[in-house]
Length: 271
Image (cartoon, rainbow, N blue to C red; front, side):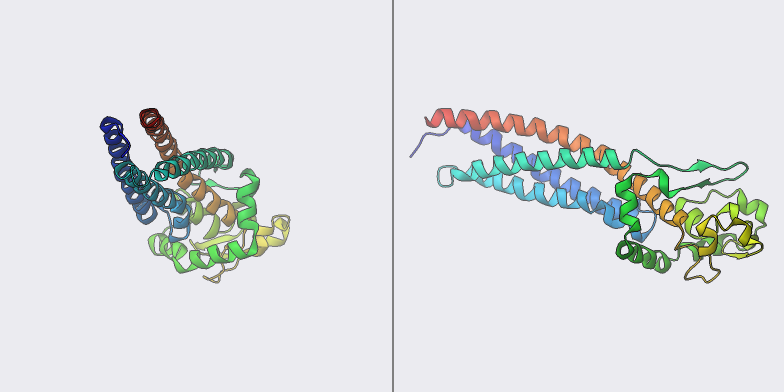
């Protein structure tokens, strides 16, 4: 039987136990953010990368633990573990850079006298715009928005307030973009989700004015302002995740470096 350094063996085992517990923490955080951090049910899937990251880290840590405990019988397992760990770190770094790149642009614009901001589709990154401009993607999101009753809840909350008071309410991006027509359309306010279309032909250069319908299943769900509101929500959702990814990557790189040092000592002892 080959000699084996118990210290290095124990170190690798402890590191993988820590990674296992770390992966469980990531999974729980991903699930909690998905359930409680999303503004609507429609953007929960943007937390899935964090959940899959936790699942993959869990599997890798189990592989490393088995390799450390049964090195004499499964010497290649540690090689597999280190390769998978390296790929996980590289993939995590790439995704983190990507998340920073696509969420850097865009944001709401202040509107004089309003308690909410307005959102324009062209302000966001091309990659995000392409996601919502794809009819298949948008139809799924639009259906989800209708079913989640975001606009119905807005009506229930402010149905009896005047226009001036409604104009000062702190609406979220989806309520601003999807539940009411753009401010420049010149429509007359009746309630938060019903507006009288007067002289809209004057403002026909804005396609969102033509897209507006008082039908509660249509409203402004076909408007570019609605897509912009969804993208702003996605942007803020990813901002919550990207900094957590940075912390995860730093911790994983440190643990990977310590693990490589221990594995190198094992190989030296074996030679």
